[in-house]
Length: 167
Image (cartoon, rainbow, N blue to C red; front, side, top):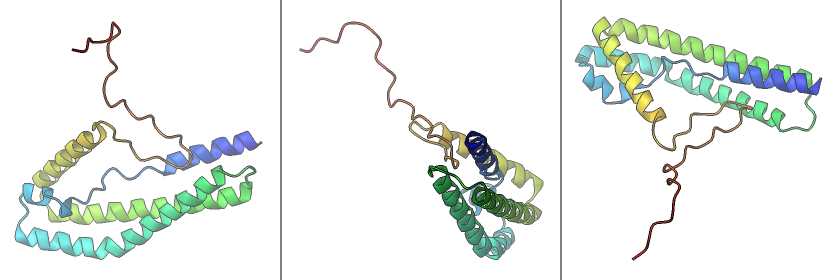
């Protein structure tokens, strides 16, 4: 029974811990300049960002708190299934609210920019993520209950053979 509960907790935690792919605060980066926003577009983007800012801060904090409680549960010798289910439900609810807010904000932002700007934005964000994820030593964020990902070696191992001679 404990094993089943542990498997369910890990699976649920990993399943709901994914951030929506559309989220990237591009309006705070050089990307906003690179996609050639007009002054009117910039102002509308700033208004939308301000409209959602406090809500996103609160939702992000609620998700982080629920994840922390779930991690605490994983570390307990004995897990109370009812308490675990309450924490999972809270995490799912908070992640769902965050996903909804991000999608709503993205929709509003998309209505401000042209299709060409949107496509350029998506391509730039994709390239930034690829560069970040392919950096040596970069570790993708962990989800509650997931074991840490192994770090890639800093340098490739030396080929087998005699040690180099010192002069």
